[in-house]
Image (cartoon, rainbow, N blue to C red; front, top):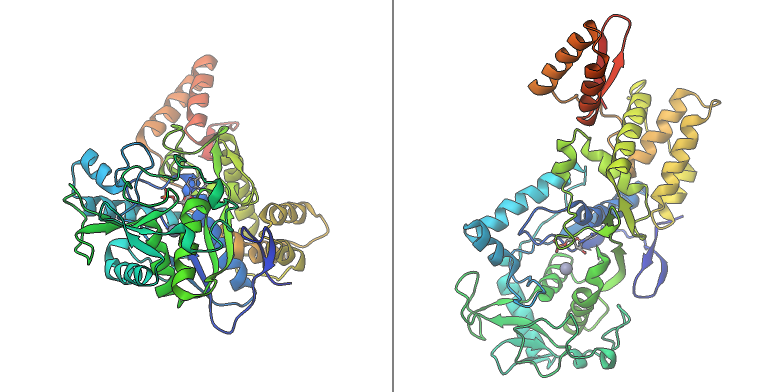
Length: 454
Ligand code: AMP
Ligand code: ZN
């Protein structure tokens, strides 16, 4: 069975056709004005899962992920460029902001064992490419220069606009949230800016045939996918919130330029909630990978916690589920450490679950059954675990070195020994609670207390 994925446009599962050439995947990357939160990382994990699932079947893959470092406007009333706004807050140059958060993004991906993309093109380095496409769209009459000097895409010029998201043009009323302020020169409310005139803006602007300015966000992804993937995108990945308007607009642009359907399959990951609400800056419930690491959890516990839910359903993460994933990971690594050099053993049930639209919760359930099965030898269990891990990417064959014990915890351990010697049980219990909430597991042996990291 080959990999089947749910396609947003046709609203059903599609088999990803195997190719002699590498399969082309495009994943919308981060806007680098702040740390990626665990919700963003859930979406970036989706392209990694698709790549690993295809590679498991022997298929080569090329993955492109863009870095948005200009042109992504916040959708609040002020409609300010996200990077420029952050550069004012931190009082550093906007490009420095972009490079700083880009580096953090790569560090997060590495901690989550996400295989790097083949290329991470930056929007600011592809301006001529975008200008060339905009000029073509104007020549083809898909775009026009608005009364405010900005260049707009004419939504009505693309006959199947709305097919991806299910939004019909005649149903899109003026004043919807998709309509950003600062786009006053367009002819029709559903049109969008391809090139924005600089106006009073002094930074992050470029010369163009339409005057100094900067590109819109949607044209960036058309340019990158057409250019770096040779006009064929087998699978296009992003978070569900990008389906409209970002991907709807990208589709209209790319297809108008090339005269064909550029994206074969649109794959969207659902949102991550944290303790009941969508993880976002505005909800105030943002969790970063660094927060997880600081609490003493393995960063791959987050990967496991995310995989315990199907990518296509909203999932609610909590500290309890992260803690549970952390101890499962430890147990599985212990199992594998008995014979880590065993080769992965292809297990059809596992391949089947992966190929059925990335049913990772089922894969994990199969692993739990294998773990408990008293009839299987340790070797065959380990072979199956290592096979699943080719896609799960949990580094099960990796015995993480425990982090060093910080001084304040070492002091608390010694205080607790003293409390026990003095039979001060209340103090000893209080210290145990404090140590355990800092990530340690305490066992009281016959002579002394023993501890390990959770
Ligand atoms: P951004 O850096 O804001 O452009 O977002 C990067 C990616 O994260 C996009 O594909 C978004 O759709 C996705 N995203 C944003 N919030 C969440 C969330 N709470 N859960 C899952 N994905 C998200
Ligand atoms: Zn994009």
